[in-house]
Amino acid sequence: MTATGIRDEIVLPDGSRMILNTASAVSLHFEGGTRSVQLLQGEAYFDVAPDPARLFTVVAAFSEVEVKGTAFSVRTENEADTVVVPEVTLVDVAISYTRDDWRVALNASNLFDRTYVASCTYGCFYGEPLKVGLSVSKRW
Image 1 (cartoon, one colour):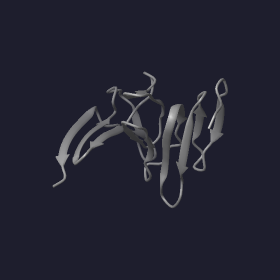
Image 2 (cartoon, rainbow, N blue to C red; image 1 turned 135 degrees about the vertical axis):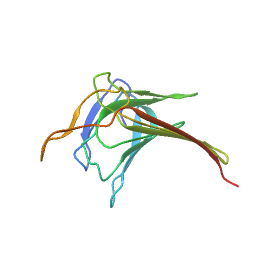
Image 3 (cartoon, rainbow, N blue to C red; image 1 turned 120 degrees about the horizontal axis):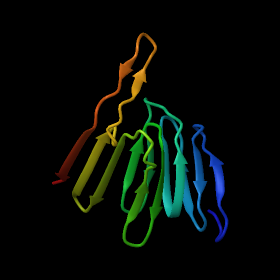
Image 4 (cartoon, one colour; image 1 turned 60 degrees about the vertical axis):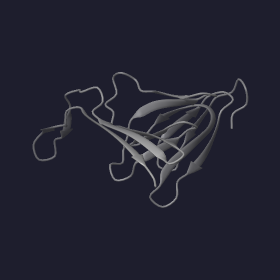
């Protein structure tokens, strides 16, 4: 937790970097294959260490963000959460909202539809174009 007027930069157990804004608090969960942060109050910026095998999750009051490796910030307030991703960043995101028995999930890969090189190990391959999926479900 940071006091009013204080920011704190923290290196997380997986090598990701978190900047906790003033008057903010988080709870960390980094055991086994889990990479998860719960934003309890305020705002945090994350520069996530890439790991395609393990998602990095930030859970706030009204949202959940899952990435494999990118930079973004999350702010939680009384009525909503705000997720900000710098425009130049290549982003794969999954955001879900659960209330009562309903769940809405939005998944997007290459959110800004940028042309990029995904791999050059044995020849260069271009990454996937923009893909977006939305699901709505109800638990009975």
